[in-house]
Length: 193
Image 1 (cartoon, helix red, strand yellow):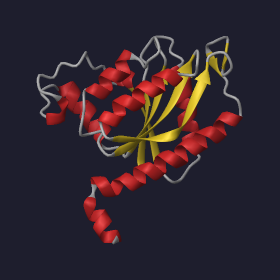
Image 2 (cartoon, rainbow, N blue to C red):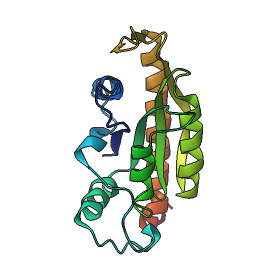
Image 3 (spheres, helix red, strand yellow):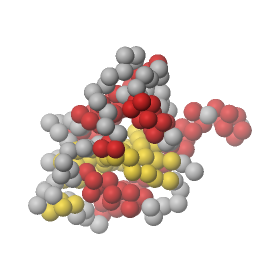
């Protein structure tokens, strides 16, 4: 079964992202074509990147890095739930991505952003970062405006139409994740031939 992590990219007290990530997980639970798990960065308190060797070498010296590596490596794809801070993603999410390298390679990702302009600029920055890590990104994104999808900028109340966009996002992400399985495991491609 395809395994997808819903990575909550904010640890700020009072964050809006928890409501969004919980909603994504609730919508995902209605599907039977993948397993979804919420991965909250608040549960993985990584300091600023403190590994002496580059992540691409995979020679981790700290327990927090090994724990993060173990969590991320088991997934086939990722949904990044990202706030938009100063025209980009959160520092904590960028730091968590930078900690690892091969764990991300040849996997798929999709994005759910929220903020003043729905997190669109954060999503575009994440696409650039993940391209360097050989992550294929789904075209469909969700951009949730604080003005229209949150009551008083705090209580998440998505329009019904957002569920349709999210299902398209799931479809694209799962398709990419499954296709890249043969890149990660070439023996599967040989069996299919």
